[in-house]
Amino acid sequence: MDKMQLKALAKINLGLDVLRRREDGYHEVRMIMQTVRIFDRIQIVRQEREGIRVRTNLYYLPANENNLVYKAAKLLFDEFGLRGGLSIDLKKYIPVAAGMAGGSSDAAAILYGMNRMYGLGLTQEELMQRGVKIGADVPYCLMRGTALAEGIGEILSPLPPMPPCNILVAKPGISVSTKFVYENLHANELKEHPDIDGILAALRRQDLREMAQCMKEGNVLETVTVPAHPVIQKIKDTMEQQGALIALMSGSGPTVFGIFEDRNQARRAMAGIRKERLAKQLFLTTPYNNRREKT
Image 1 (tube, rainbow, N blue to C red):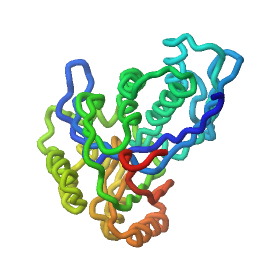
Image 2: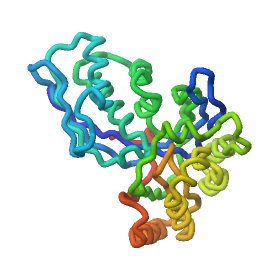
Image 3: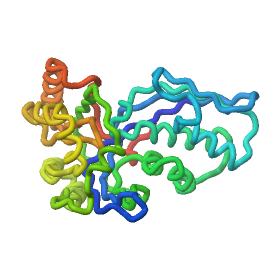
Image 4: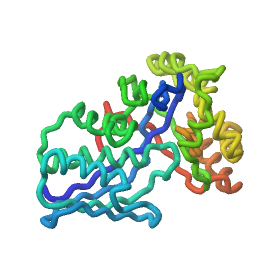
């Protein structure tokens, strides 16, 4: 097999709690991750000429060792002494620097694809062990679906799938530094925490409305990002005024997602956000359940 097409799927956080800042500087988290059907397209091609070559459709993304797809490919090349080279053509559609794990998902796709292409024989667990060396979200992006993430995000437990619904995703035209958000969080002084256990119970009951109710204070990072970027709150308000059960920031932001039972309400919210020019990128999508489907 000399050529392969891959899809790298985005994620949102149904709940994101930061328990404490550890002495090593990392933050201990408790998050519920959910894959959605927004994806980057990646083509990998084996080549005789040595070296890893990366091309991307976004001029501002690095096409060298600073790109996570390059790091993922190099990790396997170095470990297994692979011969020849690899050409990676990355077409980005997942919003960049937006709290949706786009770069981590791209890296996960490379690990998965190269494992098959080169016949390395690694299990998913073994791929995940390598993925965490590239980034904390990479193991989850290999697992996909609905999962509880603990530790620094690398301890993963599969969960019952998110109930069927419509998810409106809006990325405003701003970038948010994850480093800035965590540095300004003051994790050890937080008074209120999301109801992660309530969300878990609702997932087990497959009760979408109960889950949304438990998500009201679902992302502690909003306490930093929303005051710094008021457009995030405007998007949340627009979604909820148009019938979203809940609207929440994903990751460290600035992307906002709204959960809708009614697709027409989601479309109206999409139109409202577009009319007010609150977002640069808009997607209407659905949850991805890795127990029922393959990509």
